[in-house]
Structures are given as structure tokens and as C-alpha cells.
Length: 367
Image (cartoon, rainbow, N blue to C red):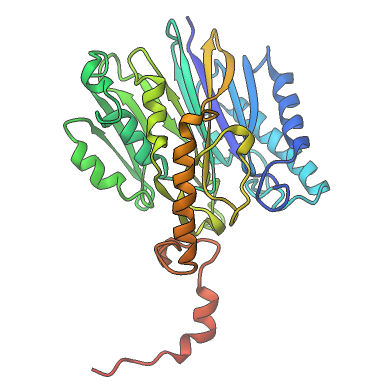
């Protein structure tokens, strides 16, 4: 059977009432454009949203980083941006760089996660989509899924998982990558990925059986003209389940316990990542709190059978309630760290204008 590629490409092209959600007209336009490409460029497609992020889920046989696939996504974002501008939506075209499409796909689209594989007898795939989080937020969850036997008993009980997994980690500060193996190099892995503001897990692979791809997260793209990074927030993630990989329930289990991530208001605050059903994928309170939705598909001959809304389950109600309690505690701290990010990590709320106005009033300390 020919390999199939899943491409999840996301972008913020305009928010309905601030950054709370995507306008239905954008979802309809994106869905029509992808459906028109099925049978030719695409095998199948599905369009969703997480907060104000437009999520394009596509299957095809062109492999990763294909210019035609990414050119299609780029066209979708451009046409949706035009609609967003006509509707006066907030931040219309926020993630779309002015100029022509670049054939180097990963250097053009705002954010993308892709994996290519040969379909198994049964191929369950989970698509995680988030809003109001920064890159690196998946680090904790990927470690729990693929390296923590307290979360994933299959690492102990299933011979197919006993060989462990390898983690490809990217250093966003120095532009380098390293691959670390679990369980033998778990401590070194944790030393790096425990600093998600700098080190980001990009891919996870099985260590046995040909280094099969298990999970991939969306990349970041620097803007070479202005130093700004587009598509840097709200990453997506694709994870394969069952038959040589953790069970579906093992992959979802980390989200049953609250974890605090960077992002939230103005991409400058810490908050709990709330697992939510797709119908709750709208960010309102303090432009959040950070939230994650998960769609499950069975991939059959490249077609997307589903989706199943994986967090539409009362089993996650307690996690959601605890996340809201954590959000209350953090919000009381207002502009103080650790609710607000450290100065070095601040984005939109950088304090350069304060230093410009008051910098000359500082005086040396007398020793």
C-alpha cells in the first residue's frame, strides 16, 4: 500500500469578536476549497477551528513539505483573509505574510505538522489543536504519552512498546537539534524539554521496527525580513495510536491532570491547558484560558473516517473544573510573575516603551 501523508496546517486569518473564534464563513470557504481539491491533489480533508485558529486537516500521497499541498493551504488562507477583511474581523491576515508563496513550504505557511507513513491494518490518528499556547506546550504531554510508564502502562506490559521511543528536540535559540532515546536517556531529555520556552519536541519515533513516526508537532517559521516569528503560537500535533504505539486512552490520559503552559492573554501569561470538546473551542475569559481540542480519525486508504470529538467526555469534567480553579488562582496575581511571563519571554506586552520613558530616571546604587 502506498504511503499516506497527513498534513495539519493552521493559521490565524481573523477572529470573530477579538480572538475568540473563527467566523463560520471562513470555515465554509476553507472546507469548499479543500473539497474541490479532493480526487486530484487531496484524498480527503476536514476543516475545524480552535479559538481563532483555522485548522486544515488533509490527507494525500505527496509526502511532507510538498509545495502543491502547502500552496493550496496558502490559497485557502489568502481567500479567507479577504473574507475576514471584508467582515472587519480582528487581526485579519495576522499569520499571513504579505508577498508571494514560497516553494519551500515550511518557510511560508504559518504553522504545520505533517507525517508520512504506511497504513497499518487499523490506523487510529489523533489531531490535537490548541489556542492561546506557545510552542513547547506539548513537551510535557509527549513525555507522559511515550516515556512515562505511570501514564502509559503499555511501556511495561506491551512488548511492542518495550523498545522505547526517540525524541527529536529542537533548540529554538541556537537553531540546532538533538535526538534522545527513552528510557536510557530520559533524564537528559527532561533536562532539556523541561524548559519549553527554548527546547521543543518536534517528532517522536519508535526505536524499533524502522523508527516509525509516532508523533509530530507544528514547526515555527521566522520572518527573515523583520525578525518576527509567524505561526509561533497555538501549535498543532498529530499522534498515532494503538498497535505498536500507546493506546488511545494512554495518549489522552495526560490531559486528565492540569498542566500550566505559557500563552493565554497577549501570549504573555501562564495558564492551565483545558481539554475541551470542539463546541467549547472558543476563548473568552481573559482571551482564554488556554485550551486544547482533539479530533480522532481512523485513516482508511487515505480517507478520514470520523471525526470523534475525543474530549467530549465527562471523564474530563474534573480536569476542566480543576483547570478553572488554577485559572482563578493565577488571575489574582495580575501583572505579577509567575502569572505574567518573565521579561525575556514577553511578546506583545514587551516593556520597551516603559524603559524608553523612565529609563533616564534610574540611578546607580551606592555601595
